[in-house]
Length: 318
Image 1 (cartoon, rainbow, N blue to C red):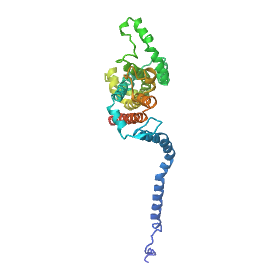
Image 2 (image 1 turned 180 degrees about the horizontal axis):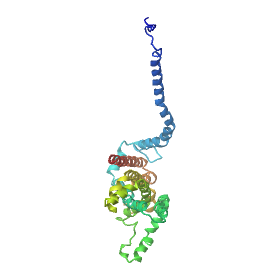
Image 3 (image 1 turned 45 degrees about the vertical axis):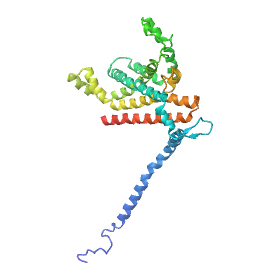
Image 4 (image 1 turned 120 degrees about the vertical axis):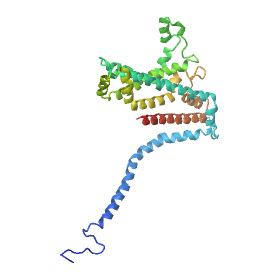
């Protein structure tokens, strides 16, 4: 020992705390490992409910789709034959094609109308705007069965639409709207446009309300007109709301059942059949439960893939 300073003993720390540091790091590491599992513990109850009410029925549907089963007698395993029928059966191919056509009426057309309506309702400074906003959203809060019954009366041969056409001298345009092989699907699709426009408009209005007014003032000072301002400022600013609107309306278009069932029941012929209606018809009218399950599984996969694609495109454009 020199200068009154004691040399540390071999294997000991000069401060006396170093030997406990590794133990502290080990304890923190153990706590971190233990804490890593804690969030999963909180998620477990929700996941159990999700698995019981969604994943298990979906798994059972996939299992049933591999059998030829009428719902009562013993099932016969047929492998992927029911899925092959989805591809080779012309009636099923037409049903999926009709569903894709309905996407235009439920999603694309309401989006175009909703963008214009939302811009007008957001930028216009007129009294009673809240009333107009309520009227636009009103179809969204009415049950689809009620909407279908009302529009079936409007499209009837002696309904309000033909009466209005006769009143203005357009008798040549009157027809049986829900009995025409060519026009029935667009007529049903227009009902979807009427319903979806309110939802799309309200979503877009929420997005447009967040756009700073300074952007419009700057565009006006630069000499931009209303159309240029709408295309350069308004539309790009509500891209996230557009993705949400497309996601919701595409799902509504692909799983439409009540509207078809009440208005046309798939007719005339098979001109308005859709996959969800085919699921009902095959399972409860024809006794082809396995085939109905295969159609339902393919429809679920189609909805999932289309919406994943829409969201990926929306994220890429941001």
